[in-house]
Amino acid sequence: MKSAFCLQAVTKRYPAREKAPGFALGPLNLSLPGGCILGLIGENGAGKTTTLKMMLGLTRKSGGHIELLGRPAGDETTRAHIGAVLDGVCFPGEMNARQVGRMLEKLYPSWRMGAWQMWCRRFQLPEEKKIAAYSKGMQQKLMLAAAFSHDSRLLLLDEATSGLDPVARDELLDTLRDFVSDENHSVLLSSHLVEDVQKVCDYVALLHRGQLLFCEEKDRLLESFALVQGPKDVLMQLSNRRGLRENAFGATALVPRTQVPSGLIWQPAGLEDIMLYTLRGDHHERTAV
Image: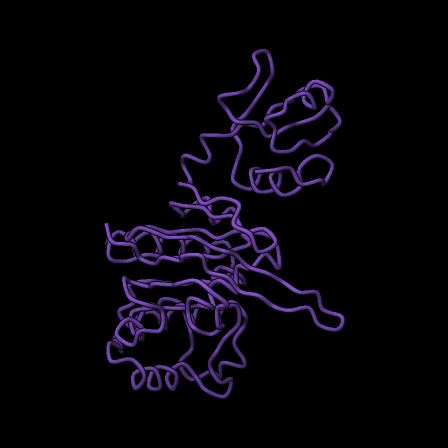
């Protein structure tokens, strides 16, 4: 199956400046099969937004190679098929939804005005109201409507569910599932809302301080780990643990499910558990992945 995108040894370096430390992202090796959704998670400043901006050509990479839909990033023939939603609206605040639709119709040869109008109605976006007067959730919906209205085959979404109420978030996740039912459509979803990533994504990638710690099939990842409960001194002896937390009843450790010692109580680990235990380790000290 053709890859929706492929990043090979991609890096970005920001030199240290006065009152600002330097930052190094990568090298990143990341790809996604068509018809799938990849969730990109990590703490603030991990490099998630920078990765998406490099893929869109909004930030120049320091090294490596990026392909989108089988062509080098920036290729004009694929640009019309990339839908993007970044954190924050990119349309002038003095415009309204009707004017935005007319503007985008001139920019995208594949623009479908009927689809735009349908999405605006579905998201309950007033056509005559100025975008500056929209709530954050409405602005997010406007960006999503644009991404769905010009024959997008790859969606690059940065915090796309941020600002949406629970019902709207759930409806969007259903929409993304429908979108990738065609294997020619794929999604990269960067999100702080790990619950949304667990609900909808096929693959999960974890960034930490600019480094890719893992990229795994979500179901396989969830089946691989368990939260084990027991006395702290017993769990501290487990060399295979990813992290450990003390609680009122003893301690809990993240352990590969196939290596849980007999006699200890365990339960399946969720995606947020795997992320937090991996990043924070024992007593906030990071352990190796």
